[in-house]
Length: 331
Image (cartoon, rainbow, N blue to C red; front, top):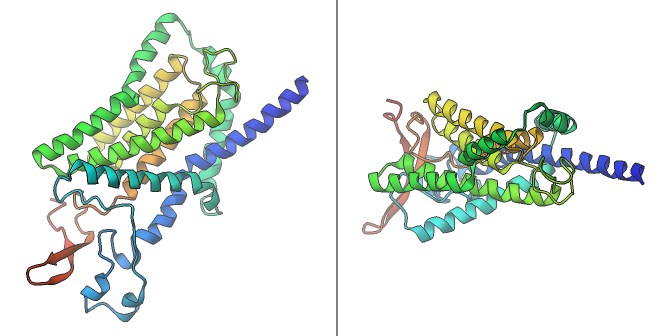
């Protein structure tokens, strides 16, 4: 009977590692397919489908290409503040497309991205083996557990969601495109992470360190992966990419995410593998959301990136597109 249980756990562990690697790489595979969809022939997602017709100087090969319809990004952040209803509708659509990319990513593995799968699998697998030993190294006193729980609340969804939502409110109030952008993309990032982590918790059902069967998978718990780690690292990743030329922002965000992750271990709510897996997936989710919304004028560092912006004049019945170079953005 014992041998049978060990065989079952070994099989479950193998499944765990495969899925962890898949979801840690979730966004890389999605980005490869998005690159072909979003940026054909130098066009960005805001270019109208009839851009080739509006530009008579384009060559025949460009005009013969079928129009590309990217349904993901229809939120034109720098323009003006959108009303809540259309904004929420577009946000919901983006989240659905994000989740499709994430959960279908195992079908896109190839020899070019195999290493990006193997590294997370190896690290997570090694930590799973040593989780109990790592947890027992700590003092695990009442004070440690209490303080760990309090500090880790920084990375809770009920803390992060109001913060990023207030960024949009500030951007709308002060007419700040970057504030609106971070508010929208931050909300999308957190909701993506919440969906992923809740699905995975139901799949693995690992008992927490303070449960009856600590570390056991499919024991009815909710330890793997860490939601606090995934959410805090996803926001840190998004902020780091948004403020590439202000390294202090990324350093601060990653430091806080690391503190939250360590605090979850100290609070005996997660094992080391839980927070590493959650943090890794969160980082990729944050980068994915940023990369799939690169077509905004709000980025002050996008100085020489050509942008195709739709133009319409109903009075004179003129429609077309303009090629914009934001030469002053990098100043």
